[in-house]
Length: 221
Image 1 (cartoon, rainbow, N blue to C red):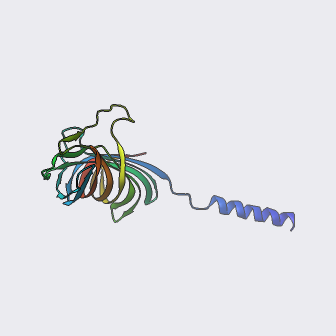
Image 2 (image 1 turned 180 degrees about the vertical axis):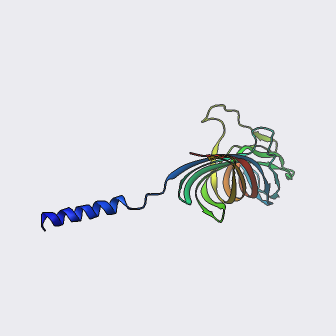
Image 3 (image 1 turned 90 degrees about the vertical axis):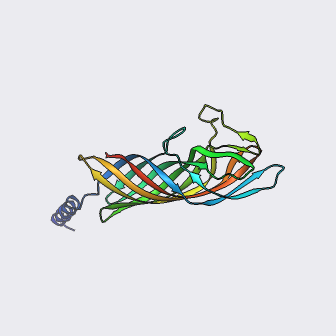
C-alpha cells in the first residue's frame, strides 16, 4: 500500500472515530423515602425447644411512625440511559396483632430489613424496579413467658440476624422541582421468606407479603 493510501486510510479511520455517537452519560440517583405497608395474612410457625410447634395465621401492623425506629426506605441507582442497576433497603416493621395464647408479644420492629440488588428501567414516564436480596431481622418476643429482648448496642451485638431472602416489584413516578431534585411517589410489593427469626430457646418462620406506599425526595448527580 502506497503512503498516500495509508494516509487516506488513517484519515478515514480518524473521521469515523471522531464522528461516532457518544456513550450515554451515567447518572447516580439517590432517593430517601418514608411510608407504610399493608400486610397480608400469612402463616407463622414458632419452634421452641421442649414444646410443640405453634402454627397460626398472623396479622401484622406496621406502625410506621413508631414506637422505636420509624419505617423508611432508601435507594441508590447508577443509570445509563433508560436503565439502571440499584441497591436499596426497606426498613419494614412487623407487630403481631393476633397472637395465640402461648405468645405474649411478637415484633420485628427494629427491622424486617430488606436489602435489594436490582434492576430498573424507564417506560412511558414511569420507573419500574425489580429486586432480590437478603432479609436481616431484629426481633423481640415473649413466647410461653420466655422473653427474648436484644440489649446490645454495638454494630455486631445489636441483635441483627440474617433470616432469609426477599424480593420486590415496584413502580415509581418522579416529580422534578429543579434540574436535579425531585419528589418520589412509589408503590411496591414485597415477598419475604424469613425462615430463621430467633426467639427464646428457638426460632420462628416468618414469611411476609405486603403492599408498600412510599413518598420521599431524590437527587440526580
